[in-house]
Image (cartoon, rainbow, N blue to C red; front, side):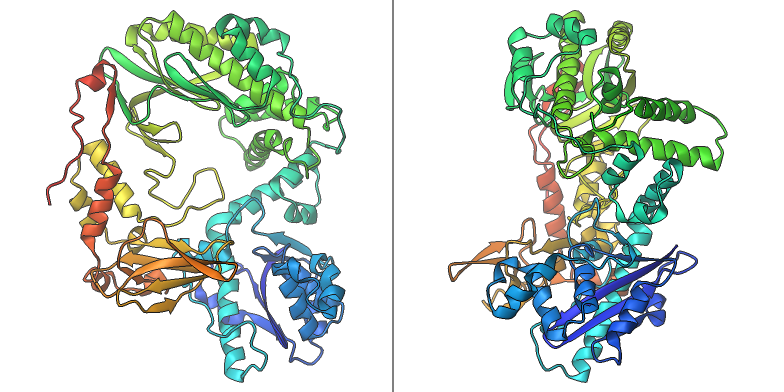
Length: 634
């Protein structure tokens, strides 16, 4: 089916819808705009033209947040409502609290929840978050918006032309976002559909989780137990858990969903419905040497494995063998050489089903919803993993647990004791039927369990959390991160890993995107301004992009909240004192010119702040390393 991207703009007496078909070669450029078509309420038989474009055979309508807005607007037009009534529907979608504002608002309120159902569609906001403008800002696109007020009643031809121009840009931006970020996400859904016999149109319109429910044949059920009920430790791991953990901790996890902290294996350990988390210390540094090594042990496919081995699959799946067959086939294909394309697709479909099922069992809106099995899996998983950590700590002399998380444990131990650790892992796996994998780690800088920089023995660098997030991509996910002056994070990583001078790292970088910071308004704020240093204010867009400037007349960016008639100003976080807006497409700027205004010292100081940490050395190797607090002489 052909993808047709679309977007609506609605004003008091005029509406507009722009359509752009995805290029046949899959390469999305600005040229796409030349082939776009649009319909406005001014057109003769506007409703007919619109419906024809929406319902054309073999077409998938694609947009961002279309389930909650554009398809509802399309239905209002399909119902034959005037442009003025369509605007009321639009206002009610945005602010349902206005349903009693007028007789017309009350009459139109039911239509603010009804979608147009005559087409196949794909909402790119499924399994995603944030606004389209935020995505455009991250991807370096032009994020400027029309100056025409969406409350303006008497539009000039110039106003309309401007609205069409910007609406075309948003359609292009949506197609570009799809080509760069979500194309694989949509393709994966179609692969699931092909493997499990789900019609293509259903694949497009479902989220991943809903689609997985269909693949497993799940039917929503009601159960007498809830996620708050006491769980029963499964017999095959019961003795292991009780033998290796204090009984009071086991009972507390078993009988309550409340989170709590304890000290165990020299870690501060957190138990709760978010899974197991522990650290030996925040702000610590650990390294391997000839005598001592770091090993990260992971339970392979931990949650999918527990669903099978502990019989914890959602009871909405009437034939649990289906899930086990998917798991077994995935393992077989994973290790099979020279796979055919069908086998590659089948492996990917299986992986998506396995990795989605547990989370879907905790969502009350899905067919897989089974809160008791969901919480049982989480609580059982953390107990069984904590039992291994505690047994290793008590069995192997000198072993330190550096951190533990949902499915893995990072430990420091003598190189000679690695075979003993492997025996403990083998015992754990034999009891449970769940395999374990080991990663060889060279060193780690650990801010906390959710923020660390880790270097593997093969030199591969892994970072987790926002502390040193230096790219907008998130491997394995179809989510993207805001721009946060990545040049600073990259310089900090280079210094920690190879002691490369941070000034050199920053000055040699010529990628404008790495210097940019996105400033988004957020749903609870009314507007955004830049307050110049002379006290004047400039109204800005909901989402903006800035760099640090040497121009002292420029000021900071504020988001403004209004409560009971009073406005309060809130500075955008982590921004420079002098913000230069760069809201045009980033590739339209000449970096040679931009760098003349760049306040390099702001970026250098920001990188220094990332490194301004009193590291606590853990273990013999770390104690023999110079960890004096980072200092940089201007």
